[in-house]
Image (tube, rainbow, N blue to C red; front, side):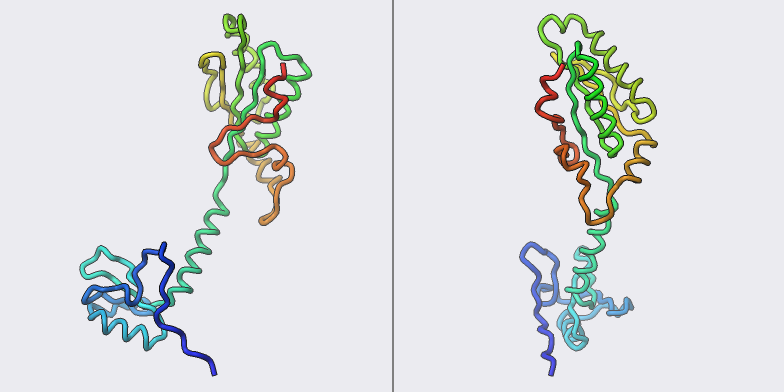
Amino acid sequence: MALPRRFDRRPPDRDNTRINERIRVPEVRLIGADGEQVGIVETDKAMEMARDADLDLVEVAAGAKPPVARLLDYSKYKYEQEQKEKAARKHQTQVNVREIKLRPKIADNDYRTKRGHVERFLRQGDKVKVTIMFRGREQAHPQRGRDLLDRLVEDLGELAEVESAPLQEGRNMSMLVGPSKEALRQARADSPPDGTEDESASDTGAPATGEVAEDAPDEAAAG
């Protein structure tokens, strides 16, 4: 013989939803289990109706006068809400911001390596902050940094869109590039199935959304 459900199922302390005995107003505007408008009833009567239907009395609009409450299975309702939120997060696009550092007099082979990193990040759908680091007398020739950034944008071609033009701040000059529609298309095509991890992305040390991270320890000193 199945045991009857326990009526007083209290939500966790962090859940501020008022259900069952937590509803202490004298009357509520009641919505039935099928969504029908029952009307204004005494809270004790609504509790009795919930108990008879093996359901919970859940306050759904505390600011109304009187508060609106509904008959439903609160545990099932919470589970369905959590599943909806989980599905919504799954479909959100996470955008990471990477950082690549260059020197004004970077060697061609190092430049090609750095450009390859930028291309890879863009194809993954990430944005890239490209920073030119000036040292000593190099600060007197900021045009060399701009020329290098212009060269990078030209070489990236249809993969990149400049989101923030070169801006010098102290010893550094930075530019932000984002993936073009073509790069985003490639990122979606290469994305792993749900529930699997993209190993090609994990080896880059991907930062959390909105953070800026250096690419690799040897890159800050390259050039």
